[in-house]
Length: 75
Image 1 (cartoon, rainbow, N blue to C red):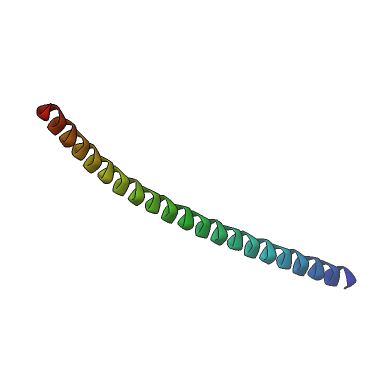
Image 2: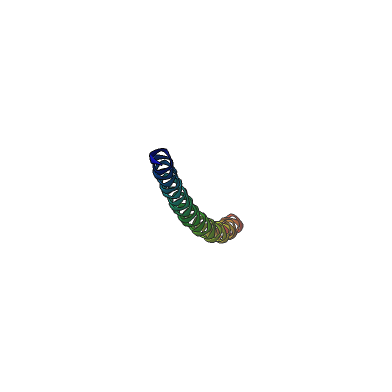
């Protein structure tokens, strides 16, 4: 009977350890998912900024070209 009780206690401990490991894995996966979402948002924000800057650069380049052309015509 003692062997059965020992085996039950061992199995209970194994089950407890498995639950703890499972919970830790779930927590790790959730943390990684949250980090991934944050990085994706930062990437989207960076791309939006880059697109805005690209548009401003094109406008500035066109404006500079226009001023440059006007200067050459006047000289």
